[in-house]
Length: 328
Image 1 (tube, rainbow, N blue to C red):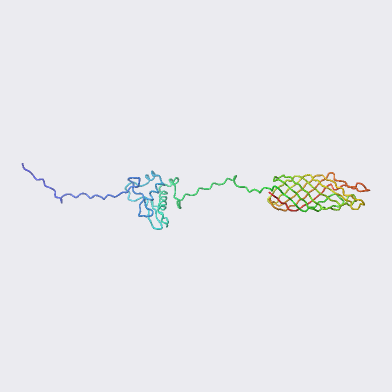
Image 2 (tube, one colour; image 1 turned 60 degrees about the vertical axis):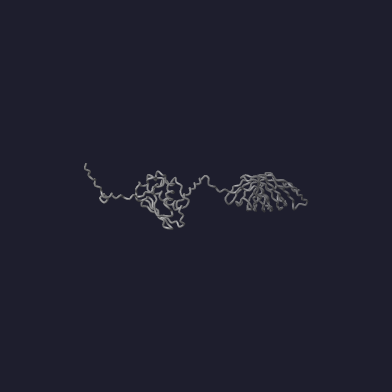
């Protein structure tokens, strides 16, 4: 049997293998196998991984998956450059350079992540927690407007509980033959804070000479009154009015009689008054007032041998000015 040798192929006859393309190394995004690294750059502050960790807290993961480029792309969506006192963030043909001289890398990472989130998914930032310092700090909540009904309305201080008025007074009768001007001092006292308060008044007067029925007399009078006062308060001046009962002790002594006595009579009637003072609620303040007393049955005056000479005045008018002291 003839055996034919099988020629062997020399090593140099072997066909060279087709050149193989070098395989590129693809780094997957953390948590997303198959996706390219979304943050690249030769930056030491901030590092790309720190930016990515902040980005996933701002944008939901499913949004990042749908918006990042497909695997195999040569360029990353986000590029960071460390320029020393500043750093630059670039994304989708948009670039922003921030100055941060302190080189706070954690803060830089938050700013870069916020810039990327504003471009990738701005709506996601409405529910994301932003960083603590500007430019990505949470804006303060607006102060709710104060309703008009709750705004404070300025009010006047309360009226004093006790008020004392003291000053010189002039009181004279209107229907005598000669007007007798009684000078002296008047004192008034009110108690209460309402618009309507009780008032008590008294006056101490010097005697005065007058004439009734041709008889010259020396007249002395001690008036007292009790009533109520109504006050109308104003911003500058307080006005008040009074009404009440008037009582007085009256003494008449003849000046030209051989035998003269000084009997004491009593007067009873009504009293009205008007006054004004500066609108100061407490402390001293000036005041002025007018008053009138009406006597329906004044005492009569008799002299011998003529007999009844006449009556004392039916109407007494007076004025007073002084200081009013309010005590709380």
